Structures are given as C-alpha cells and as structure tokens.
Image (tube, rainbow, N blue to C red; front, top):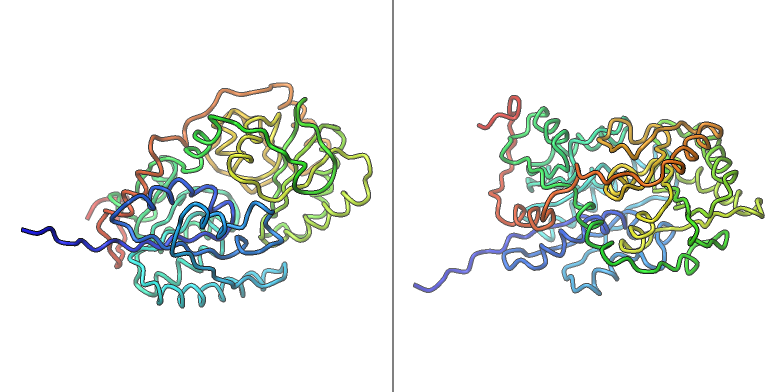
Length: 396
C-alpha cells in the first residue's frame, strides 16, 4: 500500500526579545530539521525595536541568514515607561497576536518565560482554542514577573520546565504530570556548545563609553528594573554606578530591558557617561550568543539582577553579585552572593567575589539534548485544548 502523507504539525514560535532568540536557537534549529514540523516564527516586542538592539541584533535578518522561513513581524509596543503604557501595550499585543494566529492557524503556540508580551500571545491563543507550550514555567522570582509566569502556566497545555523544583511547582498548580517535562535549560545547552571554541570579542566595535582592555580581567553588569520599585530606581542605579566606578576595573555594562523603569535606569547611565570623564565602563546593547557567552564565561564577576547570573554563570562558575529582589527564590549555585543597592555593601560584595575567583561549575540546570527533546515533544506529543485541574499532579 502506498504511504499516506501525514500532516505536518504547524508550530508557531514566539520571539519578543533578542534574548528569547539567543536562548531558543537550538530548539529552533531542531524544529527546522524535522520533516514533521511546519515551523512559523513570530517576532515582536523589543526584538523589533532599534533602541533595544545593536547592529548584531535584528532577529529577522539573523533568522533569514540561518535559513528559516515563515517569519512574521508583529508591531504593538507603545512608547512610554508607565504601568498604563505597559498594560495598553499588552492589550494591543493581544489584538495583534489574535489577528496573526487567525491567519497562520497553528496547531500549537510556543512561548517562554514571563514577559508581558508573552502573556498577550498566550491569552490570544487560549481564547482561540490553540494549545500552548510554555518554556521555563514554575520558577519563582518574587516580583510581578512571577505572577505573569504562573498565569502563562495556567493557560498552557505543555510545560518545559528547567529544573525539578520548577516541575514540582507546576504540578502543584494542577497540571497533568504527563505534560510536564524537565529537559533542562535550553540556555545551558547553548552555553555549553558555543563556548567550546571561544572567539575573540571586539567590544570596541559597538556600544559607547570608555575604551576598555579586557586582557587583565573585567566586570559585567546587567541591571534591570523591578516592577513596584520604580521610585527608587534612580538612587539604586546611582549607587550601583558608584560602586563599580570606585573599583576602577574595566566593565561591560548592558542596557536594561523594556520593563517599567528602564528609561529611568537608562537616563542615569547616560548622565554618568556624559559627566564622569575617567570611568572604565563600556555600555553595550545585545551581542550575538557566542560573543556574549564568551564574555560571561571569562568575566571576573557578573553584577546585577539578570537570570544569566543564576543560570549560565552557575554553569561557567562565574562569580555573581545578585543585586536586589528580581531573582529572589530562584534555584542558584554557590557562585551567587546577594547584595542590596547600597554602594558600600555592593563594593564589599564585589571585592569578596573577586577574592574568591572561579567557582566549581553547577549542573542543576543542565541536561542532555535539551533542544532536541523539546523539539521532538512539540512535534509528536498528542495535543489537547480543554484543561482540567489535576490534584497534586496526578494523572487522570
């Protein structure tokens, strides 16, 4: 008998920032390889905004160069740095994603993390009876991001957590155990692969600020706003700048993300760069994954509140000073010490980490073949729409 042509599963993958792209690239590569997948990639949010990109970071151009087809751009971000503007942006995102999903007609929509733009996509898919796959559910952070993350979990049907603590929490939220998968963290697999052959990174070809020589050691700073702490951001950013400046060590400081308060942080960085003549800080936007991870692996210390300090840095053994509350509650390695945004306390914590040096790598976010396992599960797992609450994660 002649073979029947099995319908390809149409998978719609949402990317709303350059970080989403860089942390998902191996999953995308595996999906592209599969003959049973019809992959569609939707690019939105800050991944489309020049002010949050560098000359490296135009995601659509990168994906086109890598041979991906079926690429879509969704514009819905409003200018402004208030809670009302972010809420309105999320509402516009819901409208635009609904329109696009109606045209694409995906079998499953894939989202990751806790961004408010991602919640827009998940809400649209849910109301349109499209199954949702969520990457990185179950983590805790102690901020509004955690609420958004858990909301997406309750909308989603497939769950790709990154650690067993997160899996337990997703099960506690009533999700069926047969649809909760721990294949490890995709960014750790990427970190492992792209740093096997580290390349020289020419940081002077991008960004602004001081000319830095990284050969004798350097710091990295990634400091993002925390929703609910907007009134204190200027002072906290000034304190962090003062602590780093006083150390007089070459520093790579990355601009903040798009959350409420980002403009306040950015303003303080610009004022500092314009008024302090003898600093040793180079201000950068996003870099390609191999360059960023090479720098992170070689840094003397990462300072700030990025999840890169919790995940990738733990795998590399890079010392981290975790600043403030943004990563509160996340599973972490011994390479992380905490400090509040007080200049003296920050300086003490950084000096302590510099004195310790490299830590032993932590592997609690690592697993074999993460991208391949996620892609296979997306392509082959039976899908469903109507959700039921499962007591303690028990099977039906």
